[in-house]
Length: 244
Image (cartoon, rainbow, N blue to C red; front, side, top):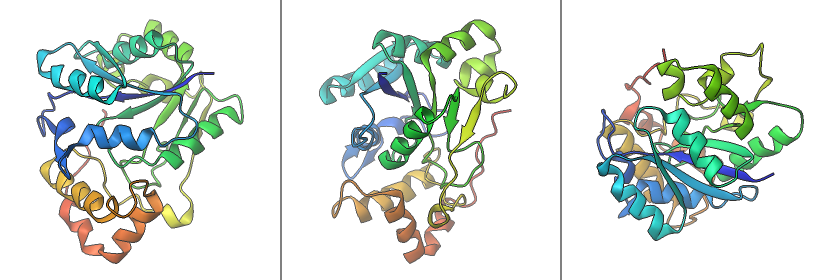
């Protein structure tokens, strides 16, 4: 099976416009995210799923520079955009990620892939129950499953949130959740970038860990927060936007 990570990315964020290419250590945030995904042992390819909006030309240009796949599709219908992206590169298993999670851990991605192949699951993620730090999540499902969902629903919410229909229908799909081990059970750590405070915190993490070890892990991140517990206050007041 060909395993492909999709990165949903666009410049038109309402809460922090342009965050996808916001500089961290002088490099675009999306570039650092792709670098981390490429450290996975079990991924075959990374493809950016961006939009046809002219503002996203810069994302396509970055993909060309980094020599990674890039598919441009609908601004609003993210489900179809991701589906067409993976069909274009012949993916069998999708590892769905988003451009606002630059600290994603390739080791956790590999655990999720191994879990998917360990049984006859339709959907595997590590956030059906929130145990990991927020921002280290990925969702896995087959291309054929997403193609089925594409025919089953035209609800705008399902079109915006790619795998929502799958995990809201456990009667139809077999779901599995990877829980964090005790040492990583830190759901109150927010590592997803939505607002300037998030970007400031994530930048601190990269600046602290990357120069010594570009392949730093989630364990390194948690140890850093144990060393600087006050960092939680930087974005601790921010509430994640609910899906519904």
